Amino acid sequence: MKNSGKLILAAALMIFITMAAGAQNQTDTTSVQHKVIKQNGIAFVGKILSQDAREILMETNDIGLVYIPKHEVKEIIQIQQGEKPITGGLFATRYFLTTNGFSIKKGDNYVQWNLFGPDFQFGVVDNFSMGIMTSWVGMPVIGTTKYSHQIADGIYGGIGFLGGTGSWAYPEYGLLLPYGFLTLGNRMNNINVSAGYGALFMERSEMIYTIQNTPTEWSTNSYTMTDNTHNDSEGRMLMSVAGMFRINSKFSFVFDSFIMLPGKEETYKILKEDYSDISKKVTYSLATETRNNKPLIVLAPGLRFQATENSSFQFGFTGLHLDGEFVPVPIPMVQWFRRI
Image (tube, rainbow, N blue to C red):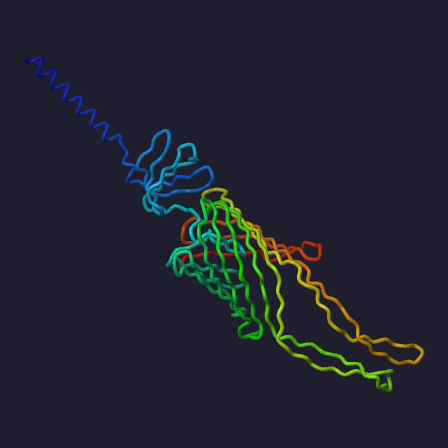
């Protein structure tokens, strides 16, 4: 009996020790935040509830429960306590010049500081934002609106509108630009195409010449001038191709463009003077000239640095393509993003 009691006691101790060791070695993954990055760049942030050789069950912070096939997973990163994962966030909605199909939520606001002035954007409701941009001298002042939503997995789209004025310096000038956009990818790796029609309204002053058959002392005829001031407008189709590609956890390559398509030809009358060596007099006549509104292309590649979800910095260069020539802009494109 003594030996039997000792065996039972030893077995009980072994079971207790094994259970205690197993409890110490087991990791409570449900209380730890992870960032799961798929092969296509899409990232999920949340708690891993379970995983096996086939899939991961994850409770994400944004969309709830999601199953992720294991063969689609590129990397799993444990987020340290107090650390916020960088997934692009607010600032992934912008490039250097244009915006894209990614939306911001209600109450998410940010400012983009440029060398030439600020750009404020406010999340009014989910998927809809409004903003205002200007220069450091308050000219021009442009208001913006944007609606965007997810069309399908990895496909986003929407519409936007810009309207502005020359403000205190040129109040007679106005700008309207409705546009649409389509974005493929995610907030870390994406490509965007947008198109719209920009219209410029202004007060234009031009001289109207009238030829008269009245000779003068120095000319065979004469002319009169009339100042014709009137409201006018002109417009062009605008396009853009832009994109963003994650290099590592903090740096991304950003590319933006602005394409102004050719406008319609404009004809106008000019005064022509012909001097005669025989009569020693000038003869006035009217000539027709044609102005071609040629295309303009602006290219802006650069790098973005983002260490936190609350701020970001990007630096790039700008070049112009006009009349078949490429002209680099000597002033760099420097921008700061900050959540407000």
